Length: 89
Image (cartoon, rainbow, N blue to C red):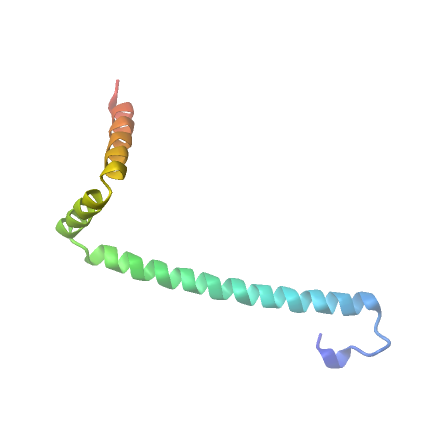
């Protein structure tokens, strides 16, 4: 339904429905744009991870631990705890 089809005699319900459809279309277009953006970012990040070697990942981890030793220690303790729980018999 387009604006040309709406006459002054059109009922308020028809006008309201037409407005709701226009708003829904606008929201759908926003959601599609957001989805495409997320897909593109995810693809780029996955490609960067695939191109990263284990040595590069280890170097990045060591740099992060040097910058934030408290957080590194906390994460290591949590990982150790969960691995201990996982392999405990």
